[in-house]
Image (cartoon, rainbow over all chains, first blue to last red; front, side, top):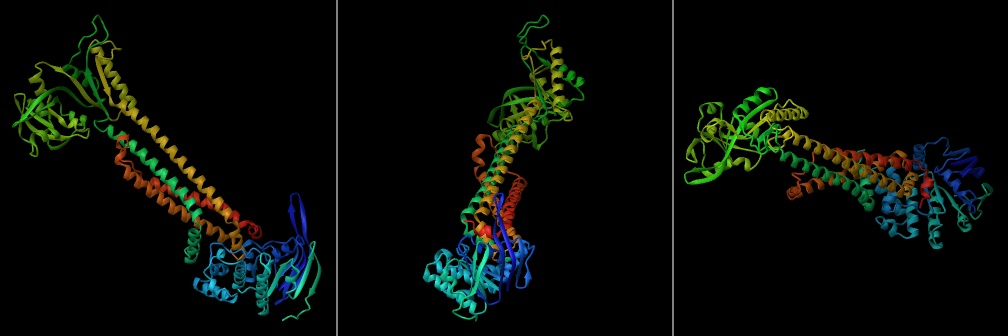
Length: 230
Length: 409
């Protein structure tokens, strides 16, 4: 599903450049539940941005769903994001003036889906995350956990190939963290590839495979032995 | 563009972000409102001036005689100058091309009686040419003719208010009015755009009047209009030459300002035209200034709006919005808001002008109004400015990498 070969990425900082990713190789198969662990500055967010087509890479190859990603313009990146990827962010990133159901429906709007169909589908995913009764609330009227569940519903709405979660529990307390992680586990069990970035050991341990990143290189890549792939 | 869903999205953004909608709308409305009011008031001033100068033909020249103020050629000052019939002939011979209409004029304030109603009026003995000179408009009957002049007919043309005073609701036409013992037949009633004073005159043939009241060939003054083909400078040159020749003829010092006075409306017309030109330039200048202020205002606000929305645009991009759809959304919003706001500013301006119209008359502002094409043009300019002002930051926002936009707090 996601295949990365010798990936390099640097950021210009003034006149110098900061070499963040130093030749990563990573292969994530369909249906996997993978976490990327690393302290801040390890390059894990950069990796997620590149995987999520939110940022470009300098060197190496990146295949998404078998398609080589190179020289991608903004428009095609947007189309691929919409089609293959669902995002869950640490800070939720819901649009503040839209209700829960409208937020979930937004990626479908950019797919060109009609209003009625969009609402039905958005409602279906809200129901799936257990927020059917909160559909017409604004984000400011929802708790942190509820917001993140809306964000998960939004990530699922287009039925993507991969869900990318950047510190999905970073802004949540432990009880709500657990409910969000449980939700991610549930969707993985249904066959979705889920890719989580975290710096919390106990979050990473709930996934099936942990990739540890330090200073732009992978230092370990191991299966969590508590359970076998579904 | 006419996708209902897209409009729904735009309406939601506009209505859920009232402050910024109000800000940008207000800028546009206010600019158009100021523009409309300014142009309206400017036009009102123009109308006032136009009206002040419609009373008489604006190419008219009046010549009066007085007493000399300087001794000349052995003659003492204080000598009274008297025009005579040969002056009429003299002027018409010398200035055949320059003079369009010409009339000598004798006038007296006299008592007019019709069946018990009586009043005093200025009675003038004139040529038929006097009618266009005064811009008098016949509403009943006719004005004087050369035949009347030849026959020394005792006929009169009276002003509308004379008829009203003496005849009430009845028509004066064909009736005889007794003016200090002599009966004159009313052949015409006229009105005059110059106003009430000009409608209280009585005109009678020059020869009749001269024969009865001045048993000689004396004339009080002359009225004439110059050939409308002359431009203002030529017209002024003509009246200067005329003055000079008349002074020569009557042995008046060329520098004597009192003995023969020539009043040429061309001078006033020129002053008015220059004043109007300056006024127009000022109005245009302020109008353009207002528009530029509006354009700068809307540009600033659009930059601010796009800045404020950076994060939202980043989210939209992450969810699959293409740069084109981002630019399109911002521009449609911008055009929609500016169009609605511009239109309402225009309407408020037009109605304010209408409401204030009457009360401004005492400030020399008459019928303040704006030509539709001017305000519609100004609104379109602002909409285009709003579009461009929206396009540049929208384009930039659409280019920002979603990851940068998402990290924007």
